[in-house]
Length: 183
Image 1 (cartoon, rainbow, N blue to C red):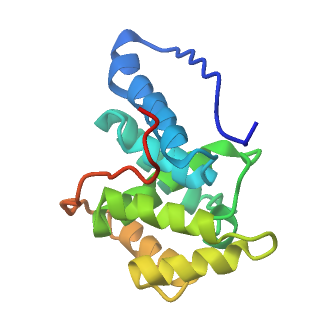
Image 2: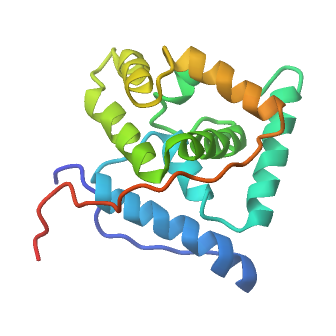
């Protein structure tokens, strides 16, 4: 009624091993996001962040696909000025998953999980029809210090070209409820 997700029904498929170590954590994270944000997230942030909880083998597979997509001719990479404002899945969905995962991982490694979630929420809250890109440019500067999405993309591409070296994720304060609990 208010645009909030309801009536959830989850059907998952795969080998028992992958169901437990990747598919279930990924899908449960979608459910947690839906409960926390109470509205759909941008596709890159939703799928990207949910992929960060998957098994290392799945993350490695996504990274391999990312490199393939970025180096193919023509490139299948998605410009950030398009990707950050996407609400629907594109026809070529796999680049969105691979790139969203890499960008979410990059941002989480910079300032932590809580900061990433606050960034996504701030971007969504600031969006206005026809001004979505301005909202994401603004919160990118505010939360991560990059002048805009273009500067973020340049830095992310450099990180990918250098091997996507992982670093320790900064500790954040635990998630605090943003709305009063009905319980």
